[in-house]
Image (cartoon, rainbow, N blue to C red):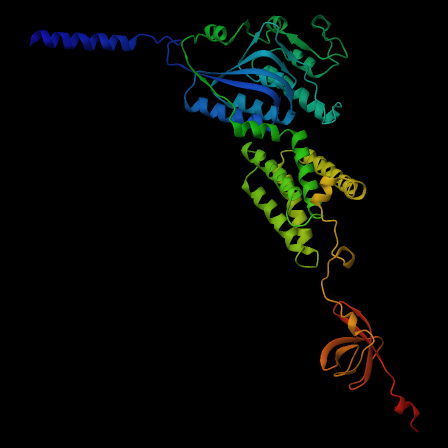
Length: 445
């Protein structure tokens, strides 16, 4: 019995001592997230990275490694991503696996540490507008300050960040004399302390960081997020708006609801879907858009124009509410409207009678007598017959011909009841008569 007590006490003491031993940070069980940043930087990427950071924080991850290979993208999206990265308490590491240009270099500078593969590059971060031209002075000043702050986030010399964005900064020793933007190679980045080291692959980076046996969590972009990233690209959503408006316009010239209407509505719904998934807007914008469509359809049933105007305003407002940049949205809408009008005119006026597919989609036939369509039977046999008015013709009324009551219209003005009339024309349901003068009345005195 005493031996059992001794063994139990010894086991408790050993267990307690093991608990006091320091834990190896590289031991298996440490959670490390690996998150890709690829292709163009846009608002859809921000939504994905926000999910990644929140997941890593919820799992108490030791570090988030962002594997970067991007040519850059939207400045406003990059700034939002930079705020996201600097606000998290989880350690962030940029692993530049090829290139981090423009907005990609800004995102990298907002992380705690930067590592690059041999042959990797970062820099060339000039701000440009949608047409590819240099942005205005105010936009440049704002971007220079952002690049400087990003570099100072990890105590890096901001002069190199400014040289990436401002071609007037002179750094000839790194190939960035005045008139050229700075792009650092991996060796240069280490030299100016913009990168902590050069690695060959992710495994080597994990070894260097001290997590060779970590519980690796690789977060991939979901299909919905991929669609959102594609749609929230300014060029893509401009195309969607153009196709959507063009489809709705052409639908007005086709009978029923066909391919044009389906294409237009689908394009506009895709626009809202992408912005909803990206977290740029809520369902209220989609509801406002549907209300606008309903009001425009209502305008086709009633007259006055008020419903149509309100519907148009509701649709335009929904687009602006869904957009993250009112200026870009305004330009995109203007382009979409102009292109829709021009293409509509081109298709209808020039190609409408030549394109067989277009003729199948749009009603071009008319239901006339020459084509064999008869809406009402013309009573041609009545022409020349004489009858009498059963009622007054002012100018329409009822006549009787051979005991048959017929609706008729006088050729001229008023014809009294009981007057003799002659059928002079028959056009469908329209029977035109002429009054026959009463000879006895004309010669009486």
